[in-house]
Length: 139
Image (cartoon, rainbow, N blue to C red; front, side, top):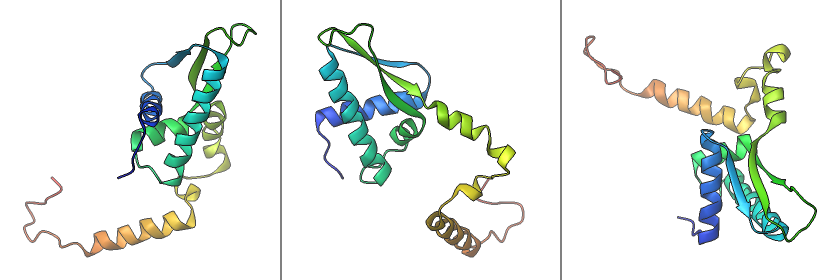
């Protein structure tokens, strides 16, 4: 199990909340310096999630679909700044073009994923089947 500092746990919670997509995630931070530092911390934790050093499916979902964006209402860097977890616009635009390009989800897999899924399918075919035609464990 990987040790996380209190700050990293808060960043993880922000990514999870964004990944839920049920409400807009906005952090009200005291100044521009803190906002930039927070955004950098969110990105550092995102790298851990993407590389597999830290496993959390809900937070990884947030990393895939959202990005932290600074909202400055004034030029004074000592005034409060908002950090908004906004949905990645480019991702939605590209996903809408998958059908037009003739790309399936299987085509988007890496070679490593293909081997993994192929092995899983072979393993599933080796599982014993129920000898009773009226009962199966899948039901």
